[in-house]
Image (cartoon, rainbow, N blue to C red):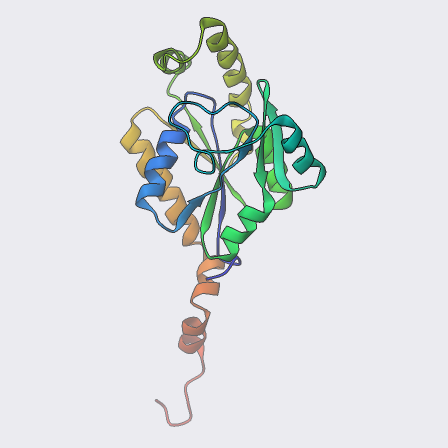
Length: 213
């Protein structure tokens, strides 16, 4: 398989919608799927690993990469910067993997310009109250930060119409199933199946031989 059949998936969601948990579970089940590890200037959180959760960098190093055109997208979220390495994404696609980029709506717009065939998925919570409860339940942020995240979440939600698929994460297992179904359906699109099975299709459609066999 090569990058002509590999798929780039864009997955976005407001903070607290459960995007990261859903993707973590899906990636464990689907070994054909790979997550692009983003660069960020934010501080490492307890339990995170450099190069696994993010590539952690200071602002100077990050902006140097921006100047070199290393990112297919980059954006400022709260007081931190995030970016997706173009080289890393292309290497994974060329290796025959389907790649997920976990980014916000700003980044999604940038990626679509570079990869117009990318498939985009937006994940939302079942209600704004459920979102607030999830953010508060983390126990990581002050009330001021939670209020700021809520405002930013509503701004993010206003861009749901820019995506190909919309998944409501009310029941985790159902949302996980639906996310997997989107991935499976995209892999079965005619344009990709034609490339994968071109030799077989040509054989089946070839004119009968002269001896009638």
